[in-house]
Amino acid sequence: MSWQPSASIESLQQRAKLNAYIREFFALRHVLEVETPVLSRAAVDDANLQPVVAQACGETSFLHTSPEYPMKRLLAAGSGDIYQICKVFRDGEQGRRHNPEFTMLEYYRRNFDLRSLMDEVAQLIGDFLMIQRRVDLSYAQALKQYAQLDVFNCDDEILRQRCAEFVGDDLQLTRDECLDIIMSHVVEPALPKDALVMIYHYPASQAALAQTFIAEGDVPLAKRFELYVNGLELANGYHELTDPLEQQQRFLQQTQKHNEQRPLDQNFLDALQHGLPDCSGVAIGLDRILMLKLKTNDIASVISFDHSRA
Image (tube, rainbow, N blue to C red; front, side, top):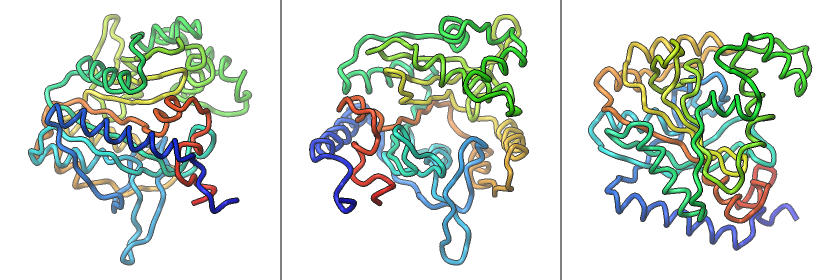
């Protein structure tokens, strides 16, 4: 019956325990819990994310895909270390691992480099899931070990040929789109089980809002990591970009990828201009953590009412 919840009572209780655990974890570290608006006049500028459009007070607005921009405005205003547990929205994302409305933990730590953030995230998630084994792989190592690709030296045609096995050869895919498909279809299913798998130093073209650097061999890389457990992506973290001019340039590059013009978040850019402290931040999908805790493959079973019953 569709009026009934999609989640069991046990799942609701486990979510309450997870929220309490997170709050205690950060209270012990003096990280401030904050709330920021869910509704914004500006849309996220990531071409891979489709925001949900809403009308409010006669204006077109957007439900946030993450609280990143307003949280960075708080950091620029002097908030110190902060975290938030909130609902986020992404249009077109629905399936056994996705719901258009889901729960995210996002947090920022001043003067943390990428390695420090990786260590803390491993403790936060590993202790709750009772997983202590950890495997760290660079992006290049992961693609070499599980997809037999020398990712920074192979040409685009080789990547397209590999992708054709999964999506056919009719699509005109970019290099990064090919890499995403290979990662999801080949690498993720092959990652070690029952371990915290950290994949770090993504291609600079996938930096999003992360800092970049030039590695050995003149390879441009992003100070970014993702955490996987049993092939399920749980976290995406950055050593955050603080250069307002570089951020403006990346926004312009993303705008060229959109099929529609999205309003830029000028308040966010102004905050960067004012000065974002050196920090690292991460977004963590809490519903997926609950899926692992409860050993379920269906996100609907950990959400009180999934989209089909909302």
